[in-house]
Amino acid sequence: YLGQTTTIQKASVKSLTIQGEFYAYEACDANAVAGKVVDADADFSNFAVGDRVVCTHYSGTVGSSSIDDYFYATITKVGEGYVQTSEETKVPTTGWKYLINQTVFDGDNTTNVPITGNFEFTQIWGLEFYNWNSWVSQYTSCTWMYCIFDDIGGGCLVASSKRLMITTCAILNIRSNRYGLVISDSSGGNIDNILFTGKSGSTNTIGCKATTGAQSTISYCGFFNITTAINSVYGSSAYGRYSYIASTCTYGAYGYNITLDNCTNNAATPVYHLTSGGSIEKWNGQALPSIDDATGGQVLALKSDKSGLEFATVASGGGGITWTEVTGTTQSASADNGYITNNESLVTVTLPSTCAVGKIISIAGKGAGLWKIAQNANQIIYFGDQNTTTGTSGYLAAQNRRDCIELICITADTEFQVRSVIGNITVV
Image (cartoon, rainbow, N blue to C red):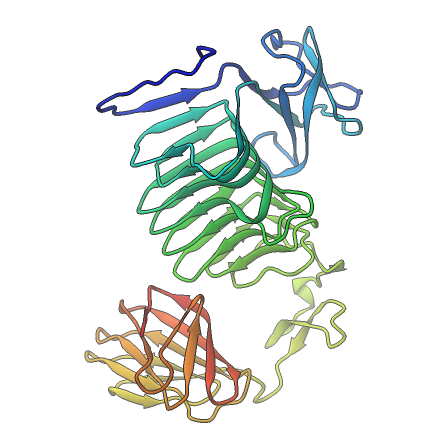
């Protein structure tokens, strides 16, 4: 840190580390004063009044369990073995950790992206990025540690098979219609010990999103005041474990191929399209029934008065799927039926010409010839932000042998919506 503007140019570097002047991340000692961070073994002399502090509380083992409480404040006094902060109510005693950054980059609401390019092996430690109306990092493989993002249009975006490693950071005050982290285009992300919050009054905010064939693992995190904590679109996957999704989030997790493992979800609406269980404590303020209350053939359903959830018996003919193995090359589909396509040549499954709203058509690939969903006149299939060509020239097609798909009729006879999928599907 030189205290002045300096340009450094290198023709080629194998690795690059960008580090703040002073930062600290440690466990808090016991104390009984609101907002006072006490650590008898720490040297706080390098910090000053006005430096930012993030304190996070862990539900169990510090640093290896979910973040279930936090505060973000500024230092108001520096003492020996402690700093007093502007927080007036919460007491950061044992079970809390503090993160302090001194080096702050104020973006002045710019849309310029400060860290971008085809970098590899870049490490960023102990920095704060404040007031950025853009991504802070875009398209580059990075390892982030001990950083704070505050009042931002986006934290980190990785794409084109890049890799994001981010741990022990805070992504705060995400702006409306923006994201904390996005993993895209077959990239991957390991996301650990991250605090995510939305900006007060913001709407349509997403903490962590996986898209376009990407995979992300989210561990020991906390989500607060966000529209959607974890989001994954078709063809992508997200694995959340030991994380906390507060009731201040509108949705817990929403999308496709999402797994929650030992996560606490107090969000006001249920999790959608989970691939396996999780710890979901309440839905809309209602306690969920015990699994022991279910009997054979029952499903978890919304009560008729929409007051909560219950286990219910599916009525005969009320939407259960009947499966048929198709060994030929053509099949006319029927509502509430599933088809296992098993031929060395392409199997074409044609949508039913008449179909009621809410009816299901499912396809599971088995044979090497793959499958294709053909349409009748005036029919269309919606697939995320894409759709097929209306009529007989439009179709969906598998790209791999084991691709699977499920459609639901949303407009009688003519409009169908993909509601779950495995694989990358061709849309024509």
